[in-house]
Length: 90
Image 1 (tube, rainbow, N blue to C red):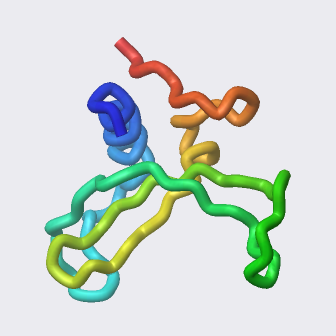
Image 2 (cartoon, rainbow, N blue to C red; image 1 turned 90 degrees about the horizontal axis):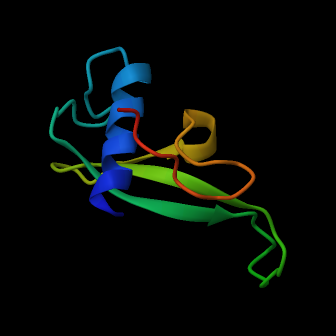
């Protein structure tokens, strides 16, 4: 993930994540924004061209490795029509 994209994601997560940011497994506050990944619809292990793809923001606990996924379109950081990361607000 580009640094400019990461800043857009960090800004939006800070806006919507209003409770204390702790891992739900080990209660550590050491969380890292690691990547933006794609999740495809499951088709019993078969490759399915044209299957829906959802961009997800990945936040990982640095202590236990628990992974939290946030829908990047629902967060408003990825445009649902173009699939592009939106620009940071000035």
